[in-house]
Length: 270
Length: 124
Image (cartoon, rainbow over the protein chains, first blue to last red):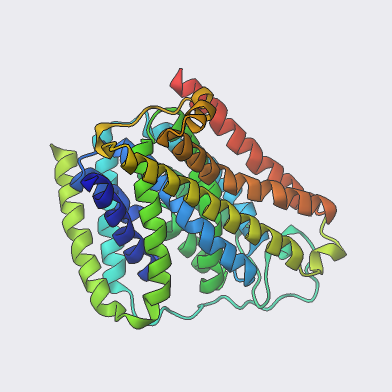
């Protein structure tokens, strides 16, 4: 009973934090389940993948309804993220757990540094609003949206494969890779890139979640309370985001990430 | 092919997909929440290690109101919702005769099918 309440509570906290700071819950769920609850990393990764699908599902619906997410672009890139996730999901069962823990520690450190350097408000869409040519036939222009034209689709595809591998190996949504690839490399406005990345999480994470599920790495008794908690937390977070001073929260989050990275690194080196 | 249909706003398709995602997500969370309630009612300790997913037992588990029945159904709904979204998109793009997007949607479904096949291979 107490463990169930703690799992739900932990999920709620991860959901709130993730939603307030624009991250999926995965970056917090994996350390929570491994370091606080002592679960094996692969089990934590499986549960985390399920949780990120749940949280992205509801918000992706809203982004589509408001026409912020670019469905064509998202589907085209998720073909590559799903392929990467398929490879990553298989790799996760072949590499040593401590290698994954080391990689996760590196990811935590990277996110902490990115968070610490992030300025408020987020940068305007730099170099995004390419003029749409008067003659724009072809598939690439079909992927473009109002006010921007998608560039460097090939690079986007390669970046998406990498995002999929990262997602499957580390149990995260992969927005940390997808958003910069779409925004900086492909010239997609930041808001659209964020929403489209969110839409892509579902297919990306489900490609690898299937592998985790069929190989017994999704524990139903851990997954259910955690996913419900994360869903509730993300819903709460999206409602209170405008009332909270994110600078203080970000500082706290950076400290938590650094501490967690250290713990995860120690686990990898044991 | 990216003809006139491509230029027209795909409002209806996006709205249908958005609705599908919302219903799929809330439905799966509801199933998971029922599973948690039954789990709590039966005093199951979550960290003791749950059973492995066995597709053949899901219906029986639901029929006997076991928590795993609801939880597996919820988890399957979670994992299937994104693929359902791709199927819905596929139907929409077939109607709009957008050949490239039809090909993309089919290719995504092939990757998902491949992950099931390869996961079973890994399991064996």
